[in-house]
Image 1: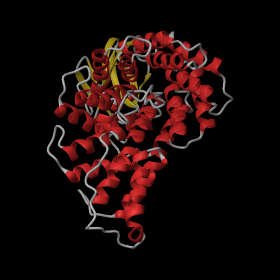
Image 2: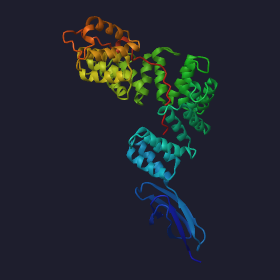
Image 3: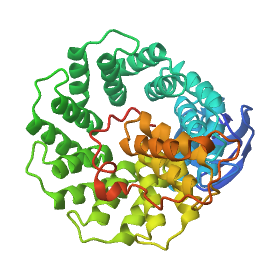
Image 4: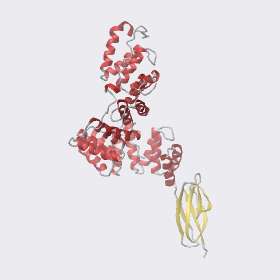
Length: 450
């Protein structure tokens, strides 16, 4: 009887095959590779041909000589694991490459992660249709996170609340904690189902009892507003604190807001700054904006206008309209930075386009006076009207002043009044308190999973 047997090895990718470190040859994907192995135990290593750092080890025993053995080895999971390492190190192009390879082989986890990359535009151009395609493939294999993400995609990009509810429900049935929270939100708002606050609390508590920080933050919101439970500000703070201590940024922001306002807890601006800072360091735009306000006004921290500009900039670049307006004010007045009217107009414009009434008013002043931008009274009026519609009384006052003093000129095609200048009267949102203060609890419907 021979002491060796023929082993037929098939791998899902091209791999180099080693036995106790000795190379046996290279397999071709989905094609059998034949090798003679002696009777006894073997330590086989299958290294991904394109990157030897990706490998899979198998202890394999040849029990009988003169017999043929078939061995199928899949390393898609190893590629996916390596792809996650690349993702964590922010090497998104490499993560995309490996997730793609594993996803094409049908690995549900890789398909879900590939969907996330297409949704966020990390490592590849943002493409919601592609994201939907890959989430759907993973959903068809019962992947709970993909079901959750697919539901969120329907909610956020397609405004299809019924389908969002459906996929949140499927994911929640598999005990996906984020899906439980979002399904609770659906019952709270009546998205794809009838409003049922009892279900909201039941589902959210189910997730919270499993140590889900997001669910604990949501319970803080429900106790603060009395949704499905009796309003209790002290309990709201307790739930926010539980989530905040787990490092959940939105809860840290909300807890900071409670200390800032004295809601359910003794007002403590120092603690407010402490929690805003924790959330801000994690990239939370609302916390970054509020931290900027604290530094600008010297609330709970030593006044530092340059620090304020730093935090406003971080939040503004994330699209926070209040921070954009406040940053415009800093550039216009030289608070913590050099005066730069062009940059002031730039940030007022961004904030105004995001619907910030004070920015619309301030930008109107800029157009009215030709400061940082070419004078255009018609444009100024349009901006004042937008601000007025949102309740900005100064916008209405400015409209009345312009119409009473320049009625004959306002409707001309070219609105330039070089002989009329009421001066700079932009509204400083940070000093009068109308904008930029703690805006309330954030109900975070957006969560990408991995």
